[in-house]
Amino acid sequence: MSDRFVKPGNQEHGWNDPPQFSYGSQKDSGGPKRNILNKRVHAPQFTGSGAEMPSPSVAMPTPPRGMNPPPMDSITPPSVCPKTPSDGKMETEPSFEDVQEPLYGALNACRHTVKKQICDDVERRLKLFEDMWKSGKLSHLVKHRMHRLSQDLKRKNWDAADEIHRGLMVDHVAEVSQWMVGVKRLIAEARSLNPEQNICTDPGS
Image 1: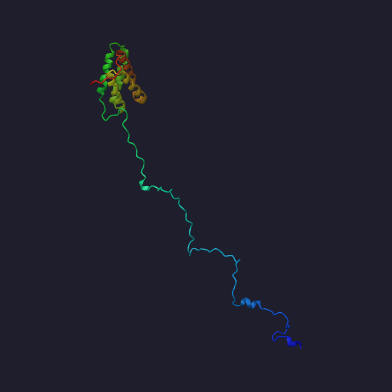
Image 2: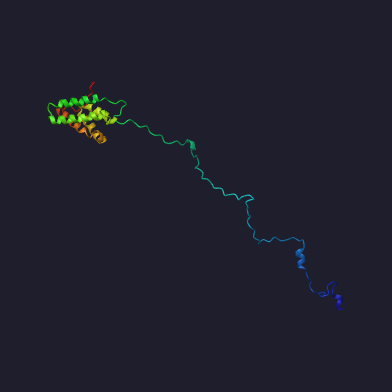
């Protein structure tokens, strides 16, 4: 009688046994599949045959607002200031005769009152000055300063002549040291003959 309660095709279970499900058949069926969210996704690999990975762009600094960088072609080197002529430098060189005449004129005036030994030493120094002038051993500036000194000596402007003498001893000692001692003594002896003449006067006045 028990066979009446057994379903056909199922000889092992009774009518009140729970049904059995085949999970394998559900897995293989074409039903909807769920996405697996915990699966790791690898970064794409770029090979030499494919497109290369773009390099990050470097941001260039921008100039402040309202200021533009100067163009390269507009930058010019600083201009060099032209040299100005030095004190006493002229285009034409004075003649030695114009310098010699006042010097020997003062020396001849001193011979009446100054000792012969002193006058001879001054004359020897003036001869050395002449030799260095004519042999080209004196610079252009020294020649012009000596021309001014001789003109001041001729006008009996002792202070101006002595000032030029001191400037030459400071600025050009290598050129004038051998004979400038005689010129200094000449200025001092000529001053002693005419001590009242100390102001430069214009010959044309």
